Length: 226
Image (cartoon, rainbow, N blue to C red):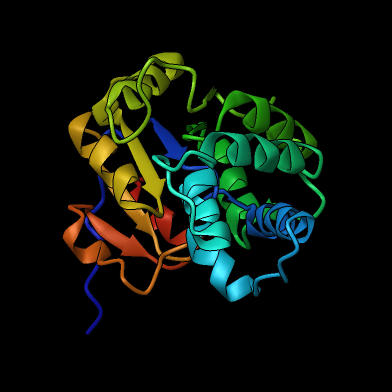
């Protein structure tokens, strides 16, 4: 017998991580990484190698693309090269995940606010959201450089709640990385793992402290009081 989801009381806003939760950005991130690899005489990497790292930004992608890490002497210059290539190809193939637009429409119909809390810098977040016609609909967009700290620090979560005009405990957060759940927990904000996102085989989301894992965006509605 299926176990019914426990609904949260008094949720007034739903917040999303961007890469791997709201929008499938892996195709464009992967394209930029493979452009950079070509510049350096390396063959392209397969999508299934790139995809699990897409939530980890330039650090994760340069790690698999060039075995580079933040303490390497070449990391900073390679990071800038990658970010410029990504900026030039920000939204050729990125699209909201299947079911996301239906979920957003359902939230709008219930007069629930929704927004984004991401570690992606604003120089990428804002144009991406605008191209996808989501920027004006969102009650808040908190980027990785909006606050002095980024996730897993709770500051971005609190800032998003404030922009929505609600308390952190009145927000439900969806994310596909451990730092997403850590940030939500630190802000006393209930959270769900978006299992359709960029989870790696080594990830153990059942240990992250989220309320539950969901496998399709519309399952979010099971946790909301109509």
